Amino acid sequence: MKDGIILWEAHRAGGGGVELPESCIAAFEYGWELGGRPEADVNVTSDGVLVSLHDQTLDRICQNLPEHLKGRKVSEMTWAELKSVDIGWDDFPDQHVTDLATLFSILQKHPERNMVIDYKRVEIKTLAEKINEYGVASQITFACCDPDLLREFKKYAPEARTKNWLGGSPEKIAEQFNRIWKEDFEGITEVQLHLYNAVDKSWRYALDPEYVSEALRITKEHKVLLQVLPWHFERKDLFAILDLGVRSFAVDYPNKFKKICADYFTRHGSGLS
Image 1 (cartoon, helix red, strand yellow):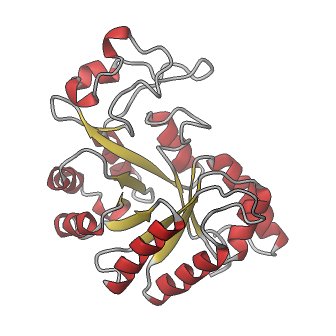
Image 2 (cartoon, helix red, strand yellow):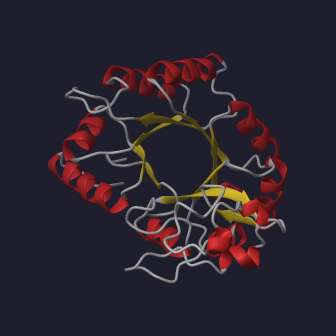
């Protein structure tokens, strides 16, 4: 296999709320068209509809939210209320929160596509049952910060992949990583390290490159995929991460990411796989 990106994910649907509004169908299509795995965060409406939305309310992502919906939790709205709200931008209007059933229907029609579901506010069994109802478990990566929840989910949807994301300070990340390492990464197929910005360092991130390299070595030995989420990056930052041998990413800027990767692999004499 030629050198290249093994797998990359588009954070918060396809555009991370940066290149496109998050949580709408167009954002997911954007991530899929670029070759990534868009991510859905899960909330549940008052009438039991599973929807893709990171926050508990619409306040952050909606530019012109009606007064009566400000501060109101999604769990207190009906699906009809929620999907009527325009979460688009001035230059990208008429966008709406999507439900998981619609996304799963798209996966059914496109078996080559995949997506990530980040655990938020839904019962594990309920989510797994909906995934199994549509027969798309093999196209799903279930992600959360709790390895015990990943193992629980795996019992209900054994064909799905599971990703343990690790955030916080470098010390906190190391503590979490050591735990799942000691447990032989039981029930975990992917591990994601959050790369937060540091101050006054030539390497942009608080997590040292030596640690990322060592985590990559350990996960490879256990046949677990290591992924990083650099919350911010420029060309030199992404080049430095790629130089470590990391080949899986989650990003908020998918188009920017793809262009930098194309430049990197062109200079290294290989293309994106």
